Image 1: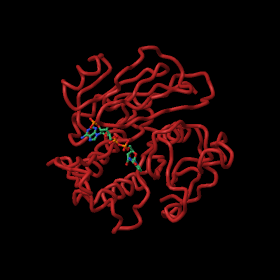
Image 2: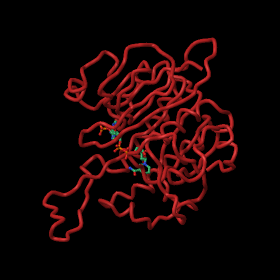
Image 3: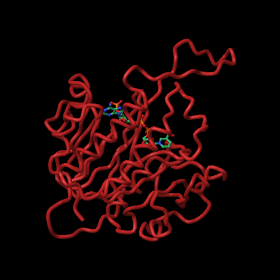
Amino acid sequence: MLMRAYFLSAPPKISQKPTPLSSSRFPRSASARKRAVTLATSAAMADGPAPVVLVTGAGGRTDQFVARGLVRTAESKEKIGGADDVFVGDIRNAESIIPAVQGIDALIILTSAVPKMKPGFDPSKGERPEFYFEDGSYPEQVDWIGQKNQIDAARAVGVKQIVLVGSMGGTDINHPLNNIGNGKILIWKRKAEQYLAESGIPYTIIRAGGLQDKDGGVRELLVGKDDELLKTETRTIARPDVAEVCIQALQYEEAKFKAFDLASKPEGTGTPTTDFKALFSQVTTRF
Ligand SMILES: NC(=O)c1ccc[n+]([C@@H]2O[C@H](COP(=O)([O-])OP(=O)(O)OC[C@H]3O[C@@H](n4cnc5c(N)ncnc54)[C@H](OP(=O)(O)O)[C@@H]3O)[C@@H](O)[C@H]2O)c1
């Protein structure tokens, strides 16, 4: 399958080459956002038009995609080179994302509210950092309204599948992540997941464990349900592996109308996952 991926938010380097999706990387930017996504796939080539994939909240770079980006300000666009395929928009503003979704076949949502650390934190004094969300950037606005806006915009253009990356921990309303900046982040993420699951659009909801900046493709991946993995020692996953699962989810019917937790065994234990059809077949949960 030939794919094109569009990026919503800040890809620092974007190739203009309309090449097939294959073992593509969106390496971690060294910037403060500290976020990286690696997409790797063994996408089978097929005749026919290339499905167009919009990835939101995915910065990084690749030399194997035709990529479109969306950043929040013109300044950010300039920072990443100001290419024609970088759009300025904000997921909290439904109208602003309409241009980015025109003509897409699939949407991968990676956006997330991000807490900021309060200044003055001094670890040498044994202090604990405190976090806050900026006004208007609380999880309610970004993870609920912002994700709902994306789902609605994608539905309006007849998208064929939406992959949504969320987080493990959502079954526990008292999860410590909900206390960060009083944002109740997992509760709002869960609400968006529910909205997607009830949308009628084929979906894949991936609830990742703690993201790690490590190489992908070298660990056995584990799928689970209802946060059961959180009670085990295997609660983390490399960012590139999450990205790979996102892309693989677009290629197997077994991934559709499913929601699952995702983590991995430590490197060196188990067998690195290569059969994604088998992985998705293990998932029996729709939400
Ligand atoms: N970090 C973890 O340990 C962890 C654990 C489990 C699951 N996850 C999930 O994994 C995914 C990625 O997480 P991450 O930690 O890598 O997140 P991240 O680096 O903070 O990325 C969040 C992205 O969302 C974008 N975004 C936020 N508000 C936006 C808005 N109003 N309009 C457009 N874009 C907006 C950000 O864009 P800007 O760069 O412009 O701000 C950024 O690209 C998320 O779905 C998260 O829930 C993360």
